Length: 67
Image 1 (cartoon, rainbow, N blue to C red):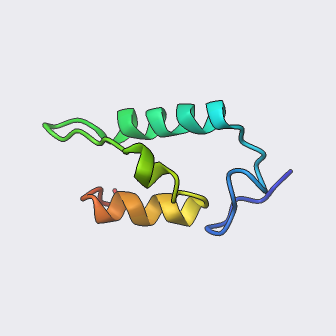
Image 2 (cartoon, rainbow, N blue to C red):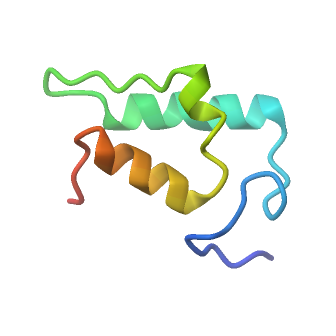
């Protein structure tokens, strides 16, 4: 079992295929949308989300705060 770390790669470490990655992105958009805020991750941004840390930085840069 892979330990999840900020540098964990979705493809190399977790072996997420393209469909799985799209589903992950859709789940993130759904999870962090609400209270009048809609999170939309465009394809050109999604291509740069390689690691868990990339996703964290992306969400924070787009106004998602730690709770």
